[in-house]
Image 1 (cartoon, one colour):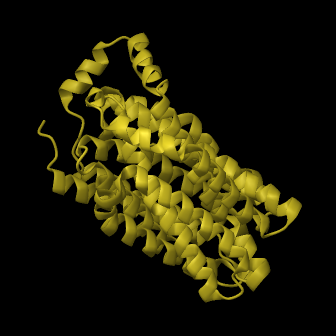
Image 2 (cartoon, one colour):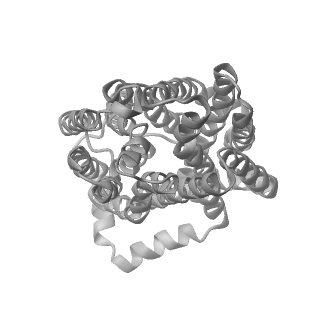
Length: 407
């Protein structure tokens, strides 16, 4: 079987991820209000957002291991089908417990994310890895451009008359489109000889390869930094709608437009600037400035007394997250031996999704206990402390990622 052409495969993967993330983005601004519709408290709303990531944390390495053995395309196809089913469940959920179960299934079947990153790692090298990861990030951003806006329009602006089922059906439709596109257009990226070699190795040998890679100091540092960046940004996402409701009286529609705006910013940065920024600053430099910008943006949100100030703070935070995450993904894949990339990416996704579980939960409890502004202050403080403690190690990790031993 011939391997996919780089440009063609990148385009098809970009479209598949974008369409799939539109479906994901549709439900993001809906969930806090959907939860409150069934009587959820602020901390329960945060946990509703967190359960997706909690279940994904458990299954992401399994999807990664499977993609190393069976290929990226089968994982993408199976997980996209499961995502479609989860949105159907969400549409028909009759109570809060069913909402939680539908989001748990969505997290379990989120292997398409690991599969997409592993696919991109297969078709890129050190010279364009960060740019390729940025393209996946841009697809995420575009999904959040259209998704929240569509979800907001379908749900309506008034929290009292919100239509919860129609946006969920729209998510089903977009997930189905992504599934069909993947099935019809996306070729396998993992060479058959690598799959045969992986299949011939014993389970013990494969486990040893993964654990040896994860035992390296540079890989562990990258995973920790990934966790912290996502932890802070996920906390913002989880309580932002609750904060704007109490500060400005906003509903789903207004929050949907803001998330869409941030999606535009993220897509522009990751799709058009990451390659040039990485050439100038390097992966380590991108991580440093990303952490600093995210901290500044978070700390500025509580002082936003009007929409322009709020948008400025959010743009700074979005820039920070948008430049640090592709750089961390690039460092992680460059640090991993070729035979373990899928599994290591799976652990990277686990770090990210664990952060998406704890970040919203942490923000929700801080919101409840200390007030609506304190989740942003706490996130900013954590970022600054971690950056100060690990700045030198980030540079060392970047150097190790380029070592010939990892090729």
